[in-house]
Length: 242
Image (cartoon, rainbow, N blue to C red; front, side, top):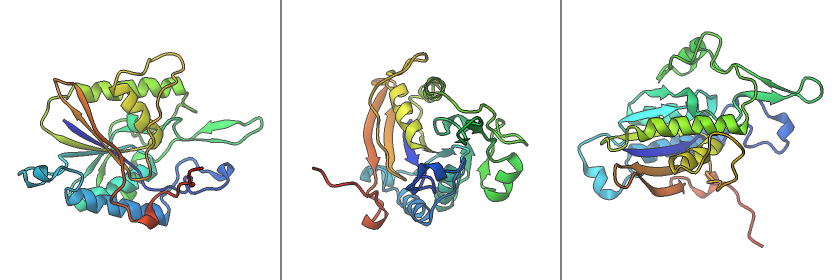
């Protein structure tokens, strides 16, 4: 299996100067929508593949999955449109923490349900909602801890590794924090209990990471954080090195 992890486009939370203004389940910014269109065209042209792979008589992605968060659904919609494919919601690939807002004071951090099944059907009709998405939403756990997120990443990694060796290409539109955890879990560097201090794999908005899951060797990290599909004006601004 060839797995392509794709981070969502820039969200309104990503663009905030004041984190206290964040919302629980943000939309894409205009820049984020432009990024999503760019990565969709890039994938539809097969440019995420090696040149020899583009001539194979098979789809550039056989399956497209995404998290149930709005920013991932928007990004997956653009990729699906470009490929002429539907995206499948994989709830377990949501961002660390789940959907919540920290209201401060006595109220503190509060979890929110996310989009309902009916709302997804209206807003993202080309996305197939999994059974975990109910009529009241899909998130009911308050604020997820780091340890819970690690266990979730381990579970997703196990599901993917069970399919190692399949001749298929899968795209997964997900989130920066979860992408890093998933890479650690695939490499067996996470533990399901306790706090883990390891590498953080940075991913810019709509960055692509490719992992080949084989029987021998089990995992090959082909590339990380590829953003060559974005022009300079859509790239992340980085401070100059000292």
